[in-house]
Image (cartoon, rainbow, N blue to C red; front, top):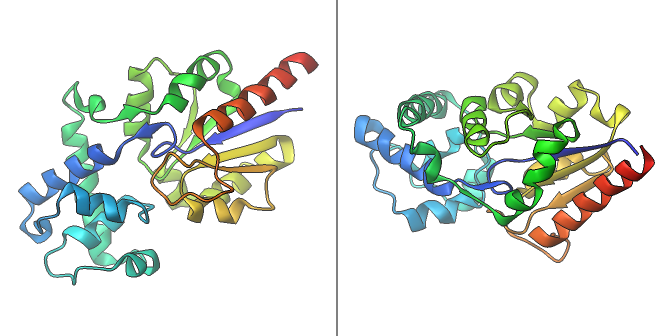
Length: 232
């Protein structure tokens, strides 16, 4: 067996909702166009369907009608939301200058469980996330995980989707691929194209009876790693 674990970042390794909300608040402070007042509870209601930073603009833009959850799911990137995405990442870059920025994100127990494997066997893992590369790298470095290959928002924008990133790198041809993500909309395209999809029930999207707990996901990961070690 030649396993490869593809790991989402937000909602799988780290609870980053408050960090994203903090970035949006900074945007609102500095840009009157995106100054609609959104409480953290409202923000979290929408977080369950958001899959990319530009979508936060649908909530905070003053001139846009307050969107329903179903509408958010169907919205596509346009000139206005593209502009929000740009100011969002500018605001995050500014916040990241503070050494305490990384503390806005809390590692899930799942991260602590697999951390030793991320450090010992970095070649078995890749991060595939709609979050920007720089913020992922800084967070992982802070927590002592420094050698993982990261495919962030920049790669997904280049290729079009998470699945397109995987296909471009031909991972399914060379590896037994296991993908862990909390967003069903990201997992669904992978069904039938890789060996195993694991929906993380501890993240932001709704869980179902097919979802995995943190312990279940860890046990699968550890079992596969042990099988590889035994076969080497």
